[in-house]
Length: 456
Image 1 (cartoon, rainbow, N blue to C red):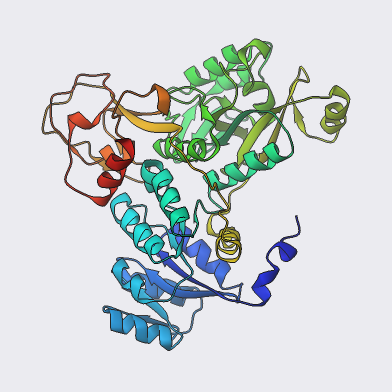
Image 2 (spheres, rainbow, N blue to C red):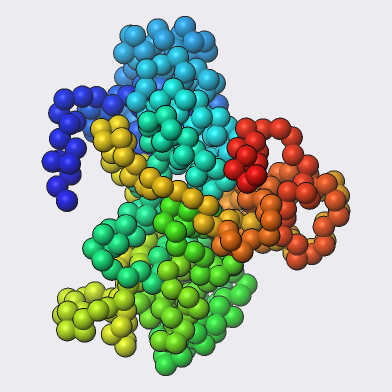
């Protein structure tokens, strides 16, 4: 694909962008790249920490007079007319500005949905970085955007959009997709000389891993043993379920299993792991989304939060040639893994801006539907009045397990994880319960109202 030809209209026009959640890591990466693209006009930045956002601009080399703090609509309009970046704490002030696209990156579903709705109703495109929002009401926002003649899209540079791109690329080329997935956020790094394994900031002795470093003849048994050896370490992450929810809703692929599989495996093993059980893999069905934990040595490259698909090989001779060129082909020659070992956050997101604004076409999916549902299952009994309090970078809720259910198989009125989070229980709940709407106390909110309307 020649991207200069695809987006040749950039020669003739500028794109006016607003970014919410501007001070976060994603925001910084997008601002870095936008500085290199003259056709992107940073019209507004929204963040509760206005001073921090202004300091961020200074750290990136923006002139001291490039931006103005704006607390009113009039100030925002004056900044725009003067060619300055309007830096605001109140997202409602964005309505005062001429915009082409809003990149929503607050990560706060209640605020995020309001920002997206306001933009869509003004016929402004939306790139939804906040996967939490997308997993609850993404299909509804997608439908509303089409009704208003604009796009609602996942942004390139984040794993869901990158995986959607890889899946749709494969489908256009006629590949049969067996599985589509990603690596979880952090690697499990083994140091052979010491027998220690490091995961994030934890290092544990794991000399037994050396005995199961290769898959051997029984891949499922090897994977089970690896999991057992590292059982003291976390092997699942809540945001993964959210991201795979977005991919499922955008592609129609269904969860491999409710808990997702999370095998500890090497990149080179993916073509032997994410294949049907009858061929030595772990999958009970084809056409699924799933997640793996990247296991590697200290001297091996990371998968870097990348994405992959496994596909069926239709001609043995062709794939043997590709195996010789270094591609991942299963030992039985029936499957192959195709992967992108990276996601570059906001550095790639300008492609989504170009696709939306220049072509009125999302870089993600144009036809989202509720194919999967990220649910909550209790691990212990809860009492009425307790709050499902979510905290930390990894969005954990104490004593609950996230699940990714096929929507058609979920209990009626199952509440999405990020809608149930921080809500109070209306009744006693036994251990092992999937949280449904009747078990929670809801204050009226736009997020709840949109979800409720879509589930009636």
